[in-house]
Length: 294
Ligand SMILES: NC(=O)c1ccc[n+]([C@@H]2O[C@H](COP(=O)([O-])OP(=O)(O)OC[C@H]3O[C@@H](n4cnc5c(N)ncnc54)[C@H](O)[C@@H]3O)[C@@H](O)[C@H]2O)c1
Ligand SMILES: OCCc1c[nH]c2ccccc12
Image 1 (cartoon, rainbow, N blue to C red):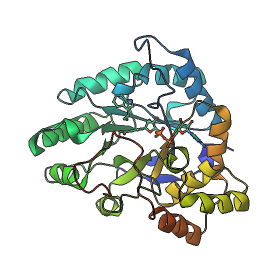
Image 2 (image 1 turned 90 degrees about the horizontal axis):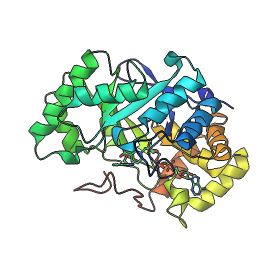
Image 3 (image 1 turned 120 degrees about the vertical axis):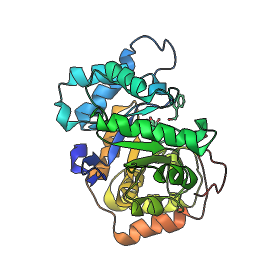
């Protein structure tokens, strides 16, 4: 089953974004010899591509952009079929050069989505606004077909929206049934900003036991799919792009079951309701300073 049986969503640019992405920033990727090409990472990405994960999620700090580029070349998939995201983190004050460097590593002339990785580099609204102006410039150059942010809270979004001529297309956040970010997801969508979820599988890989376990048992039996597929399907039906990953082919095949069934509205609501019974954050990357439920 290919991921292209999964829905796409429309970004505020009009472009379609595949609702399931393959992440390259998780611990099983490249942890040593950062300057050398890691063939294991290349092969993992090629496996994902061969199964139909056409949306790849990278970042300058993951040190996997060169591997993404090689995997794309070796897979011979036409560029226009792919959706490539990367992010800027350490080079926030030199965004045009940072994107050039990423494009060289990726072996691409443009990315489909370029994100500010984290707002916590900033000391004032002005530094965020200056960075966003640079993002708008790289978008106008055609080298980033869409631009967005990651780990932004409403206060950060408000800072850039007050000066933006281009509204961020995506805010990539940690999101799962135990971390539904009720204060920001629909608020953002009303302003044209779609949420993408990292950590969508946290309830089964980090937060057990939990109230969702019993619900997942019923739904996996009903649909004959794995628990990961149920969680990914819930994410997608909530209108949120799911950024997941694995180095194991069998796991990826399981994830792609999410493209082959549909939860009823009642089941989506039940996962949301039961999920709200537990609050769990699996990652320290998106820590916030205020309401931890935002
Ligand atoms: N923007 C950010 O700040 C940020 C932060 C974290 C991750 N990301 C992106 O999101 C991607 C995915 O993040 P994630 O790894 O948190 O996603 P995830 O929650 O989908 O977890 C994927 C991991 O779960 C493991 N897994 C799957 N099923 C399991 C099971 N039943 N039991 C135990 N483990 C299981 C997989 O092997 C894999 O390592 C990253 O690779 C990166 O690209 C972005
Ligand atoms: O996307 C945030 C998580 C992450 C994975 N690898 C990294 C390296 C540096 C900073 C953040 C990360």
